[in-house]
Length: 178
Image (spheres, rainbow, N blue to C red):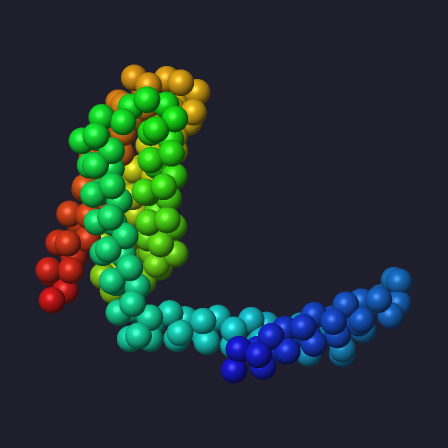
């Protein structure tokens, strides 16, 4: 279905371009309009297929596990960094790269499933906390790369709090949905 949609999109686009290129000063509307409609049908087919794939039970179950484990790993990793007192520039920067980066990516890749699992408002609440935490982690990384250890330490505390809040909201949503 998706490949048929892509074929319609490409064929419609090319036929529309052809219709406009036939004459410099006028457009052959008898070719252009059906071709444009074919392209629009292709887009609709692609979107519907993607949406049904994103809502499949297998994808939602796998992404729910990814969301939970990655967010918990982020909180645990940042807690360990704080507990080890790694506020020296190089160690903190490398610790973030080694321990947190992959889990941030895993959570971000699975985030769209939050909408299908819990609704738009819960998605917005969790992602607001997550995005703030991610910005703070980026600030910690930059501060540690530039040698501002005190700033890195301050923002590490802020980051962990944002991720704890996001994790708590995710756990509340899971309990409410159960």
